[in-house]
Image (cartoon, rainbow, N blue to C red; front, side, top):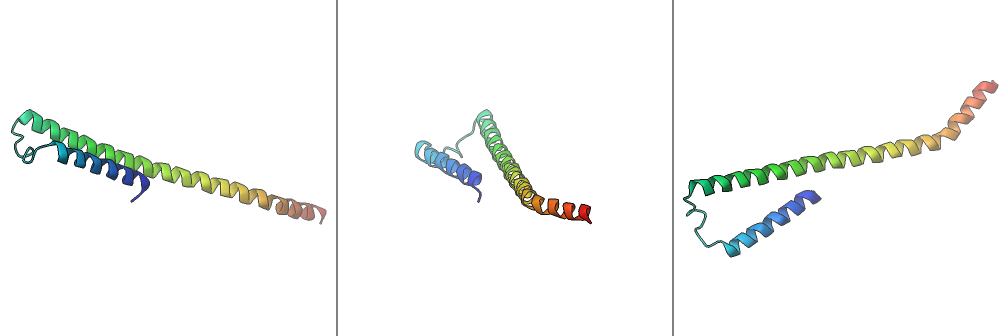
Length: 95
């Protein structure tokens, strides 16, 4: 579980705890009003879609971080290799 998934899980758990203490037993099965039931289903679907989107975006974020780190590592490697390459080029020119 990554850090964003952990935060989302904690927030969802907190919501469920609040609902468990504030909604009377049997309320879900007693939701007989079609409009309210539709709204609850839509809200649940929106919540699931937002979670999926956040996790997907976080995956892109992590890959972008890795790309930046890798590019800086290549830049550092090239900088450390530059003096050796300059020396080899000078030797080749002298020969």
